[in-house]
Length: 304
Ligand code: HMG
Ligand code: MG
Image 1 (cartoon, rainbow, N blue to C red):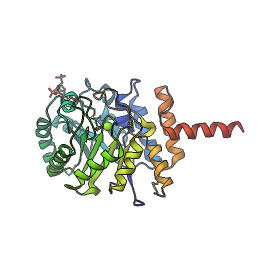
Image 2: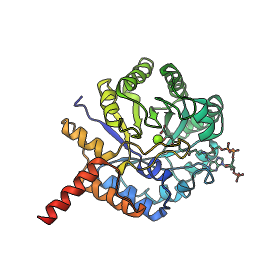
Image 3: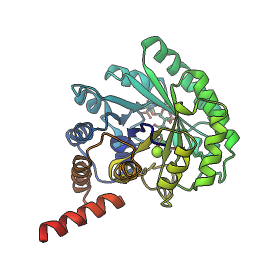
């Protein structure tokens, strides 16, 4: 349990994609730069998807270009098809993420096609990425439940994860898109996927709608998973997952890990300042428990 954990920061993509308040390209770039300065050196910075579907991610090419000067960091972007891949490459992407769903209902709502059709769209992306030396991460959404189809069988998740792996994805991120999972179910699905694929190449991408994400992450760590997706401030969610809230907050994850003796290399003060800055832009306080607690503690210290 004390092995190094790798955090993949989602705030600028999964976080901002569901926020109503528009955030400028300059502020998105500053957000990414601040996250890297806080020690989060793998950041998903945008999405090359239809701007009609997700207007918040428009101009992701400007964000990706704008952060290209940042050294010692890896930037990820979502691509749903070859059109997205073309645009991502033109902007200099070195790592792209394709995203499939374990449920037909969510696949249709999110990317307007069946699961099988989505795989057909990904095949040329993965083939070209291999030829271009671009790394591809693969998401499986709705691994612990779907807002349209309800319960999802772990085998369906494992089968799709294997398909993405066989196509060439280097890591499979398992998404509890609507944050309904609980620890025993999280273990079940991670065991099912871990029976087919190396556990070191799995990531946990848990939204925190029902407040279970930290417990589920702990359960997943007990199964040997060492990669965690999280978003500063617990921002966001998916516009096509009705009622879902943001990813587990990065500061909540860092607090838990450091408390367990796992060194994250992340500077909590800088992370908190970044979270507060973005919350200010969005006009509301951060939802994360750790950010709220640390902000309240600071206020008390300033008063005394
Ligand atoms: P479609 O309507 O089936 O695609 O959308 P189409 O090929 O028929 O094209 C329709 C229009 O979209 C055309 O433009 C295309 O040019 C354009 P028009 O002629 O109408 O002006 N288009 C594009 N534009 C920019 N970039 C592209 C692109 N492709 C087509 N790559 C499509 C299919 C996938 C494009 C659409 O459904 C879409 O963009 N969906 C957005 C999905 C999304 O971003 N969802 C949120 C991220 S996923 C998530 O949050 C889950 C995750 O976090 C994990 C988890 O939590 O589980 C990853
Ligand atoms: Mg997500």
